[in-house]
Length: 225
Image 1 (cartoon, rainbow, N blue to C red):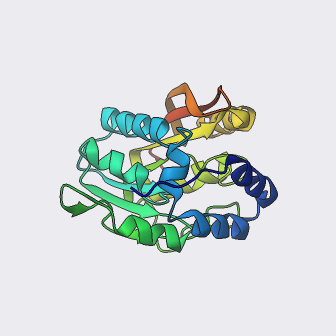
Image 2: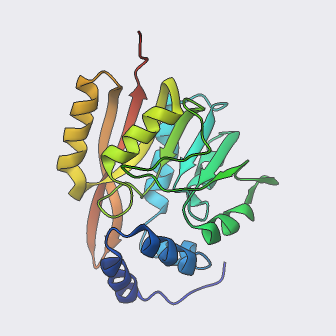
């Protein structure tokens, strides 16, 4: 892998200015796609949580499930899903440049992802080309936070596209704890989901300090009419 000089200050400044504008984030990830893996692995931003999410998926989800890797980026999360044994994995992202990088990645001679989806997940948006209850399970590493995909928007879309009794396994950044917990509680009271587990893990390390996230396992509750 080509080595890149990591300018963490530039990354933080760009992220700070992006705010909640999806077009800014799309531009950010399009720009960083070619060096994303090297840059973010240098601060353990990706590897620890994607490995843990893959482990939790393998613990709860049959390996022959049809899985959607939401906000897959350049495919680091998909690589870990393949390594633990998943055989049917599609990728999703808003950055087409990142998707092009992910298309080039293979594991044991086969592409990491079978198909790709794109589109925003937001309060008034869904992934239009995914029918209801199409996937057995979904996973998402690193994108559920106050700037990217809001917790409530993510869980609403996961509930739509995942089959009853399927799973969503994802990270939620710790500073989103309050909306995360209240959203989980609301959806549990509505009998839409069951919280299987939520464990605190290191999200990334910077300046000698650890930042944390929750690695969550959610089961979709069947709706009986």
